[in-house]
Image 1 (spheres, rainbow, N blue to C red):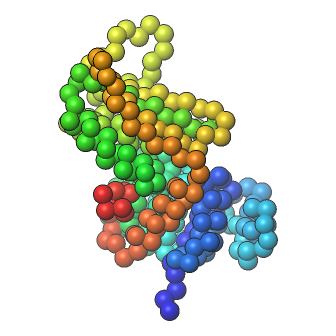
Image 2 (tube, rainbow, N blue to C red):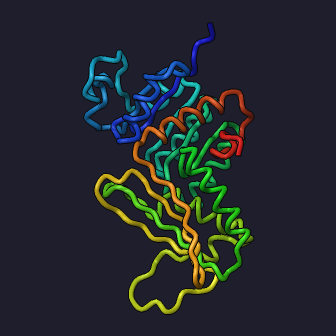
Length: 269
């Protein structure tokens, strides 16, 4: 029987890191070969199972990506923009599929991924869930069907520890709406309303970010015109929807040609 792909999880102590580890450990389609944390973190050198509050798993948390990437067929990465960029080069050297769920990237980060993808398989998405990716496709279609008499607003809510805004998912939805309308999001994005802002500019795509409590992730796309509104919504109540999607992406990427892919590719959408 062929051995299942070995996977490294970066940011092992984080909310998503721990959920990813649990999902992989419970899976019969992959196995965990590495749990990575930043140098100086108090989990480094500890058994990952014990560090997560359970029994020994026989795998120590490490701060050496080179060591664990060399053993892996895939790296699943929900960390920070700078960390993900650093991991991209190392994953490419190891010929491991790099699944990136990190958000908050700027253009110079994206340029590094583009270069790495000449030699490696990268699957990067603002959201790994099936439902959100369906929402993205719906948003594009609705935006294409409606003219600028319909104002578009993307409203997102997340827990109070999230550090970037708007969320990567909100931006993904905004990109879908802009693509549906045949415009560049950079030209129509409005995410900084405060004070006397004046009337809303026709054709803009607005963003609102809510932060509070332990909200996993909620996204609405509002199309509002005189006398009517259309709202399409996705609500996540369990991070497992993201970890399952990330694992699916890691498995899908096995044997794929080098390049940049997203969850629409993984899901065949």
